[in-house]
Length: 362
Image 1 (tube, rainbow, N blue to C red):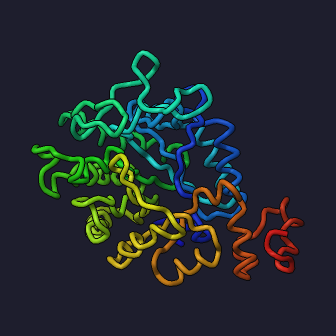
Image 2 (cartoon, rainbow, N blue to C red):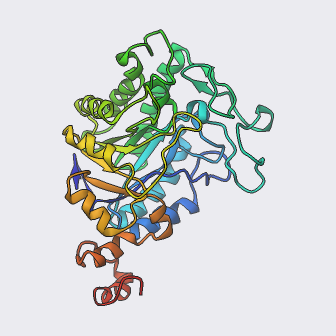
């Protein structure tokens, strides 16, 4: 699978997942990230999308989020990207601003029971949102000003430059799950009557200006992905058709692939998950002529192969399944009778040379 100057060895990609693993609360990744991403790369995945990586301290979901808002965070990420490349995989940084869903407890040992927003006196921070409306039990955010939103665009562009310096093969913009880019995008959460709201063009402005700024900050041979909630799951929110239409405009501005998820916008409004339940969103985007990635409890190799071979998506992104089994891609090559699809690292040769003749799981 090739996009611009980046070729992934296969169409099994790691889906972005929040890790909350920067123990010093400084946004700098460490040994956990080297082992986590390194294991998936050694396991044969074609491309890895990192956890949500904050573009500013106030854009974090939790105090333990990874970041690229400071030059001090570049070298630790470089350690990770160098290892991933050495293992034959590609890696993209997912850049994010949590907006009104930020500043929450990470549900780690010692965190407050029930979660919610961390009080300022305990290390929390003021939240920023499209309006002053809170998300569920979270604290109410401050309504973003024009200057705030212009700064958000600049923060994404600066983080993209740091991602390039850190050796990433590109970036993904997190415009799903009710985070700031998504919150501005949806009519369900954007009630603004200024140039950042109102009609469709106003609501899309933050995302499109961010796309333009990030594309300009990246070399032409590096990829730009966008994660969208293909459907909001509530009346008046985005539908698959709306997202396919938006995907065309994103592609015209230099976006190379849309990573299709769903929901996350409104508290208490979610889909009931089942294997492949988010594939229809990817299929709608791909039918619009834009490369798409499919997610959503895809765990069986035959199911993943069917999604791609039927033309519903260009790639399949796995999250929890690659947490359980970082070598899923190699096992899938055995199940699908393609033993040469993912060559094992030399040190793992004995473990895989006879796998084709053994039942899966033995």
